[in-house]
Length: 117
Image (cartoon, rainbow, N blue to C red; front, side):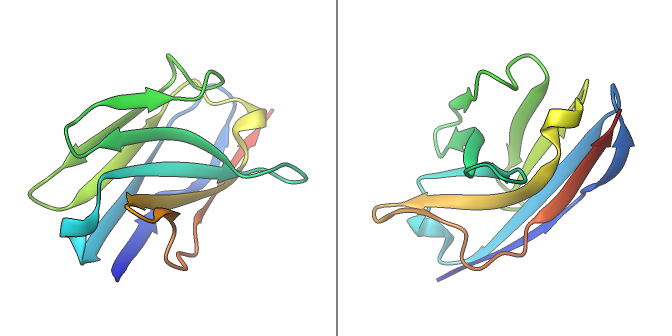
């Protein structure tokens, strides 16, 4: 089992920035990638950014050029730097890990991001 602790959400005006953090512990050797999903009101949860164990990154088209995912392997922590935030970025952001059985949030509470116009 992997434990995930997310932090860093909040309320920000459009154009502002936030940085999310996700610290992983437990069976971290089973992790192939880490990522952030976003659950916006009335919409399906979507993967907005991921970083593999090899350091490769990918982003949803809606956040390319604005969001940056990075990691500190010594701290088993992944970050999501979100710049030029838009009201449509509002939602609950969940840290997930990819193992051989797929993406899991391991019951993480997520962190709320609210962008006001």
